[in-house]
Every structure is written in C-alpha cells, then in structure tokens.
Image (cartoon, rainbow, N blue to C red; front, side):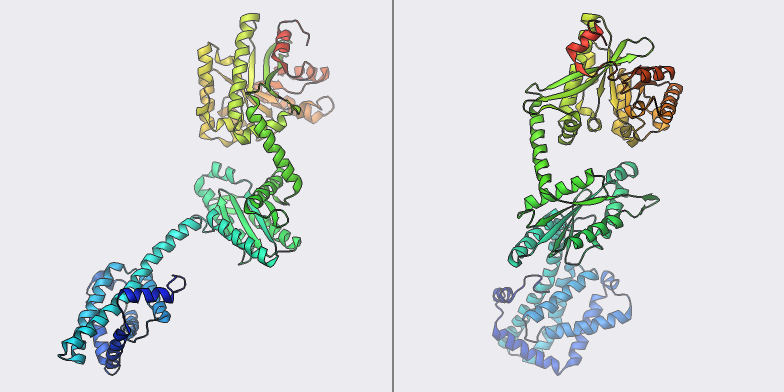
Length: 601
C-alpha cells in the first residue's frame, strides 16, 4: 500500500522532520504506552466514550447500524488508538494507517469528521497524561507535544488516502476508457513502449492485433447510440476473454480495439487468437429488445519483423486491418510489404488528386440518355474523368473512393455540378436544346448538406430546378438519416429531380420508393447485359419497369450495347436508355455536336 502511494522511508522521514518528531518523543510515547498496557480498562473506557460521542451524530450512526458491527469496530479502534503510542512508526505502521483510511472511504466517511475525532482523542487522553506525569508541567507538556506530533502524523496519513483516491480517479480518467473500462489510447502507447523495450532487451517479439467492428455504424444509425454503447461494452468483454492476463486490450476510439501480445513466437498461436476473437464477436448481441449480429476485421503486425517503432507498427496494423476489410470482412490478415507499397501509392495519388482541379486535370464527360419512344437525346449523365500528367487516364473506380475518403469529394462534386449547370445554360442559349443533366451525389456529400448551395446557384443563373437530376444510391435511402431526408426535401422543393442509380443491386425496398418520392430508377447494367439470353433477367427488368410505372416513377436502363437489348426494353415500356450502343461518355464539345445533329449517334 505504501509503495503504491510512493510513501517511502525517505518520505516518512521528511514528514517526521517537519513535525519535529524526534527519538525523544518516541521515548515519551513508549512510557505512555507501557502505562496503557497495564491499564487496559482505561483504553476500553476511552473507546466507549469515544463511540458514544461519534454515534450521537445520525450521519455517522447510519454507517454502522447494527450492534455486532459496532462491537467489532470498537475492538479495531481500541487497537488503533493503542498503537498510536507503540513507538514503531515505520513502513508497516504507515501501511496499516493507510488501510484504515481506505476503509473509512469504503463506508462513506467524509474527511471533515477527522478533526473532531482526533480532538476527542486528544482531550480524552489529557487526564490520562496527568495521571502518568502528575504535576510535573515540563514532562506533561513534553508528553502532550509528543502525542500531538503522532496524532498529526497519523491524521496526515489518513487524509492523504482521500487525496490519493482522487488522484487515482483522475489517473483512471486519463488512462482508461470510461465506457468499456479498457486502457485508452494514452495507456496503450505507454504499455506498447514498455513492451518494445522489454522485447529489445530479451531479443523477443510482440504482436499487435487491430480489431474493427464491421457493422457498428449501422447499429448506431438504426438503433441509436445507447445500443451502440452496449455493443461496445459487450464486445470489449468478449475480446478480453480471448487473451491472457498479461496481454493488453485497449480501445483506441469508436469501434476500434487493439491488442498487444508479448512473447508470441508462433504464427499459429496468433491466428488461433484472431480466429477466436472473430468467432466470439460474430455471436448474437442482445441489446435491450433488439438482437444484433456483427462481424470483425483484424489486422496483424509483428515486432520487430515488420517495424521497430510505434508509429510504423500502428500504420502497418491499420493497413492490414483495412486489407482484411476490403477482402470481404469477418477475417484477419497480416501486414505485408506490398501493402506498404500500395499505401504509399494511394497516398501519392490522393495528394495528386488534391491538386488536380487547380492543374485543370479533371474533365466532365457527358453520356447521352435517349428517350426510347422518340429516339432523341433528352438527357445526359455527367461523368468525371481524370487525366493524370504521368499515369494517363485514371479510372473513376480508383480515384472516386480516394476523393470520398479524403473529403475532396465535396470540392470536386461542387465543381462537377457547376460545369453541368454552365453547359445546360449554354446548350439552351446557343442550340435551343433543353437537356437535363444527371449529377452523381456521393453519400459523403449528403453528410454535410450545409456545404452545398446548388439550389442557390441555379436560382442566381435562372436555371429551372428540373434541368438537373441528382443520382444517389439505394443504400443512402435505406439508412433514413435526418440529413438525407432534409437534403432530398430541399431538392424536391427546388424542383431538382432524383434518380436511384444501379437499382436492384442494393437494399431494394418498395417502402423507400414511396416515402422519398423518387423520379427515376436506373436499372443496373447487370440486368441488361444478358437480357437477350437470360429469361430471369428479362422478367426482373420487366417487373422493375411495371412496378416503377405503378408508382409514377420513370425508368432508365444503363449499359445498353445492342439493338436487341434496346428493342426488348422498348417492348417492356422502358422510358430511357443509355449505353455504348449510342455513345460512351464524351467531352462536352463532342456531346454538343451530337445534340446539334452534327455528329451521328
């Protein structure tokens, strides 16, 4: 106990010196102690008197209401007072006094009562001192001074436990996660640094496991944060049971946990632990009235094989975790050097993308959308293209996710919209053609509706709302977030129309089609590519079209490449088509020639 408080022999000596607590005092206290030893009735009488006084206060009486507890406490307290004069005030004495202080806190005794208790002790002891030393005032004063010193030394230790408890609470807040009780990021870094030093001395290795809960955000979004908190607490408990007492399990924040496994040399042991964690986390969670299933992705890195410093180890285990997530989730994966190379290339490409707008490397291409009945171009989809100065054309499948992850998507998305609106105005002014342009809107952009002022820009340019169509994914509607509702309502009020892109591949639901007042369904190309030879695809496509029309929604078929596909779609009453049968996405100048009739489709 005294070591935990850092009350060393030197610390005890300093306290005694400040109180001027000398060996002479110890000798005097010993004389008093011997007198009390031969007069135990005096101590018992004093104890009874002390507790009568203490329990005359209801607040103190309530702490020990039964007689058995009071009798037991009296015996303990008699020994406690008796030991004040025993003459041994070393580390054992200090440790016992600290235990008493902590015991007082457990029963709820507030420190304000200490001064009154010690005053009662001192005043009760004064007649006993007079009995021992008689009328010798010099000895009486010296004895009383010695008693004062030991009492204040004792009281200092007792009160110190209250201060120490407060410090312990502060330290716990600083080093432990308040929700799960696991070590937090601060304590994790400290322990990892210690384990690395130990591994360096011993020539051993250690393993880091980074765990990410795969469907945690969906739980938070659908059931609320209280349910999410319950899930985190239970996940932490399950993870902790999968490792040894010597291992550190910490919560880094959000739904990420990390484990330090020191002195694990066999990969089979690591994999067994990782697989066990995946299995226990995949079991059902009962969150109040809801049963939830999640999975976990785990990244693994090894010291010193993969890296020798904390920053690199954390970077590597993060890369390994994201690789496991990208490979399908609910699995673990080791860090490899190829991951590091991929990460560096990704970072380099992201940095280039940040400058692409300023360097005029981004271009908006337009793919014509034809009305099937008339065969004329009435719409177009704006598609972003990136011509990198050294890599050439970079696939949108590569750079759009980078833009979303880095947040650049907001700036780029606004720029695409502005380009599209300028073209809409220009084509009507110069060519007399009213073309509606579809602009893809990332789910990331919906998270910050306040960052876009599209409706305001259209109003300033005098462009009717229905000249722009916003394409969104099914998954965005499935979440039913307040921001999504707000954004779609803003579009509706300004006349901007909305399409669901790649319909049929996500969380298809008739409920949200009705709830959100959608204008168009874009039938995914996966249904169209085998339309000629696959009866199921034809049946599904026709069913989508019939359902959409019943709901007052128009349909656009994507990926139309053959005349047979076009004719089948026409026979199913599909409204619009786009695809390579007519044209790929082309620069604005070429698209303009198409709608001006100067270039055949």
